[in-house]
Image (cartoon, rainbow, N blue to C red):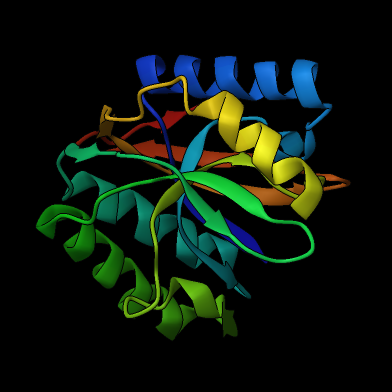
Length: 183
């Protein structure tokens, strides 16, 4: 299973990295670093033909323009290991990109991540996941309440994240409006 994500612009990436480093120092939470790049996941899929898929992403990016998104507040996906995240507000350009990717990739893939269906997708930037507990949630949220999460972020790429051992690492990344691979 791969993830198709958009890496955050430098300012947002620095903010997220600063927060995740503080959560690791103060609470020992480092699970979010399974993906070492701050990002917004657009969908997950099982891709039998990666070459066809990469050609599709390159063409899609050539036809795409930068998207400005906004974030606000904090969110929680509950469970035994709750996920703490910054919600990304859905806009028409973001919804259109996501719907196009979901429609086209579902035709190429053998399996799609269910939570990335356009009717279910909740775009977000994870701050803590995998090593959280319900007991630590209160102190973590109290700590995060001191921060402002009303951000503006520019999305300008589609990046393939692939599981490598215990991590999800960058495979390929493509900039919107340009025919070049970014490393």
